Length: 410
Ligand SMILES: Nc1nc2c(ncn2[C@@H]2O[C@H](COP(=O)(O)OP(=O)(O)OP(=O)(O)O)[C@@H](O)[C@H]2O)c(=O)[nH]1
Ligand SMILES: [Mg+2]
Image 1 (cartoon, rainbow, N blue to C red):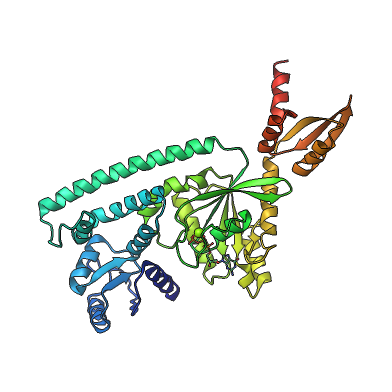
Image 2 (cartoon, rainbow, N blue to C red; image 1 turned 135 degrees about the vertical axis):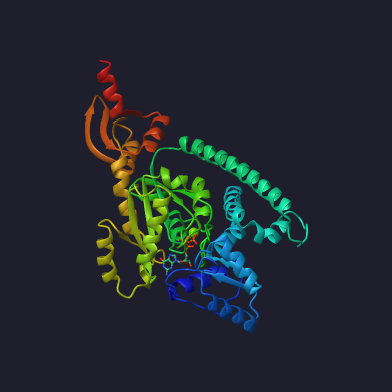
């Protein structure tokens, strides 16, 4: 419980508020009116008065009724964890797409809580004032919000279509998506792999809200397309999960998901489960996943963790972005995957073209070689994009599929 509340405190801090007290209660079953017991409500009210608190945040989800009742009794603004997360997302969204997604999630969260949120809404609409709405006004607002939700959904479908078109036009290579709990080090990994220092890395929750894709060199002539995604968290509002589908489409199209885990966090096993649940909610649980245990530089017992990691998954990889060789194992694992994707082709190169021949050994894995009339014929494992490049440069390339086709047609 303390760990959950510590995390909530970090969220609150990120959202820009200051924690002045914590109150907990163990309850067998939540009361429908207030979630907590009525005596506890009184305790919270007194604590607020004592410490001049202007906001009460619940770690558990509140129903619209509970939220309204609590606000009435406590006479301060009441939020639940979901609303705090939505708040953070809305202030951190930068790209057009992320903004659309967050707005959609907020409106969907707001719709059943409209009476309570009306003061908020009037601010968004441009200072109608703090006067409470009448029933007609509420109905008008509901209609307006539903229309807005519709509009946002349509816009997001447009974004999704655009993304699909872009994806279709890309070179084929190993596609990797980084997923994981927030602050696990996903962006740091992409930064270390790509060497791009302007990728945002921060010791705070939800530093990344946009997907970012980079083609990275994973050694031995292999490349992979790696996508960084938004982090997950316990009790992520389902409205957010739903509206971030367009962004997470990249993960759906990936050949493999790297599940980045902060191995130095005492609760990493819980965090892994949370991520697995969200992946499930996004229908991504069937994707091949490799866990990447990151931040191993912070571990006292790295050997113990390595053993646990293998129990979790036989192909689990240990990593750290703090040492230059910290990603060697990860790159190796990616190369193994890329190799599987790499088709065997035949190229013909003039025997006199030493530079080109040497290049073949560098960019691909040469499996066989024979010479005939001043031409070298190489059987080679080569990524598609490399083969296409060679063709553009005038090298004769024959693919397995070409050969099958010519056999079929005689
Ligand atoms: N000690 C140590 N710190 C790391 C390592 N990798 C990342 N960090 C730190 O962990 C924090 C979070 O890193 P990010 O890369 O922003 O994490 P993220 O998973 O992208 O987080 P969100 O975008 O918020 O979901 C930063 O302060 C990083 O410097 C590592 O291998 N070792
Ligand atoms: Mg990030």
